[in-house]
Amino acid sequence: MSLEGRRALVTGGAAGIGAAASRALAERGAHVVVADLDREAAEKLAADLGGTPWAVDLLDTAALEDLVLDCDILVNNAGIQKVGPIHEYEPEAFRRIQRLMLEAPFLLIRAALPHMYARGWGRIINLSSVHGIRASAFKGAYVSAKHGLEGLSKVTALEGAEHGVTSNCINPGYVRTALVEKQIADQAATHGMPESEVLEKVMLTEMAVKRLVEPEEVASLVCWLASEEAGMVTGASYTMDGGWSAR
Image (cartoon, rainbow, N blue to C red; front, side, top):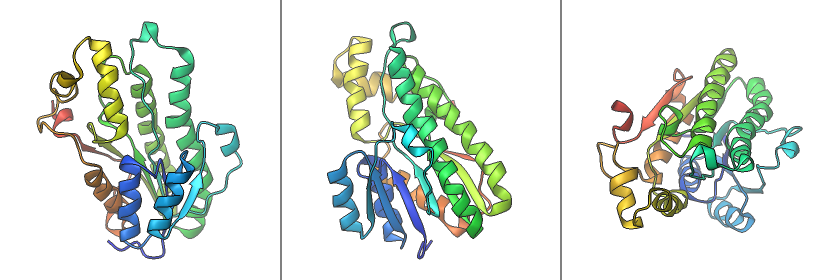
């Protein structure tokens, strides 16, 4: 699955799933643009991979409206989380999650498609979640954003098909990242239980395979979806949730 000659952009690319995807894409020959809010981390990883750092605040969506991207592979991965009941959820926190996880991917896809259309080839890979196809209590903003991303991905697939551009979602369960580790504390507070019980009693209850997904496992699917071998895969949502969505 060589990606020699391809240019990949990974958002949230300096940590967690994004860093694993950046490394895996670079190992297969792609030139990787590591896009991250953390400038120092983006620069360090890009230097290690022979790629390019892009320090960017994707919450500043107004700055993305006139963006032009010359990438062949776009991985929309950046995300945040805030857990809480709807009736107590701050409206600005809800809007913030929609901006980063739905509006920013739309703007990046919009910026990348002209280049992809001109080349007759492109891959849009959206890091969704099992919460893109299932819901959980206390995650109204996150579930809403991921469901929206699923729809955006499918529309992109339909529009891009005649131009050689595919668009797909990856839907992991809980992945071993800093974002998930922070959720453990939030879930403990929300459910009124010790942090030591959250994984077993809250986060892994729906997963048949009782462990966290590893970032490298997600990265392997990113690379396959980016490859020539996946040229007929588009408009799809690939679960990697340990059997959660089988219920």
